[in-house]
Image (tube, rainbow, N blue to C red; front, side, top):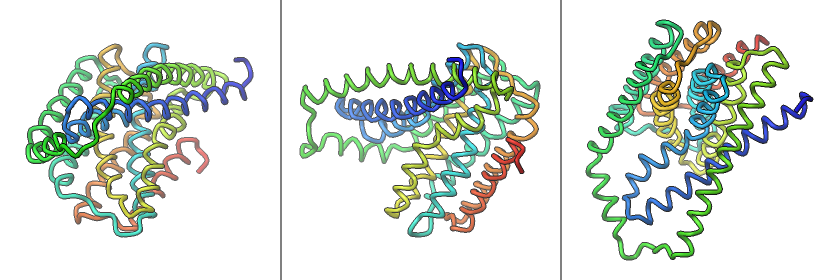
Length: 323
């Protein structure tokens, strides 16, 4: 692992393995949850929503264990900015119809979406460190949010329960269950290996190029972990169903701030560099507020989508000081 090209190859392969294995892990966990009789709504709110942020969580945890705690906050900021600007922007541009936003997202999830960004910013700017106490507040906040979502969706849960006990629904055979368990175990192993090699190579690349680890985390790692959402969004947009991307982005960003920062922060205090605090945190706030105001009319137009894309191009350009 001496040559830079080899380190870059390991970084790309590690990140790709982490992302793809997380996809298999989430899919297998979802099927097992349904097989165990859990309502589809509960499976969606818990397993699926958390699984989409598994790459961010695992790469952040490995950053902690390998002495690169500064990558955690950068990874979350970069992923959230990419989710808002790149994923939602692409959905609005490529959608075959005007991108609609559901009312319950605006009335329930969106205020917490913006509030979590402000809470993150206040915690980061107070002493440029996420303390264990602040991390505990974030984790508790997500638990409260999860219980609220489950409690406020009784009607959806009841419908899902009826669907779950539908006698016409296909039953899982023992062979199918064993297959999903095997996929779950193998994908978990590859997630572990992918996260390990991604962070290890990131550390060595940053040292070799004399680039801050937080800069690589906020750009390359964050963009890589957001690629699955981007691919799903493009596919959904071409089918005229891109509005699903908005809900996924809001849920993923809330999870990233409360859990992906909260859990590693319980293990070790998380530093935030001056560059991230003065440049990336304000960009996250701007993108979150822009999202909040744009969706107030329950839609996102193609021109608003281009506005998101331009903001992301500016963010990446100024991060690497090329514009």
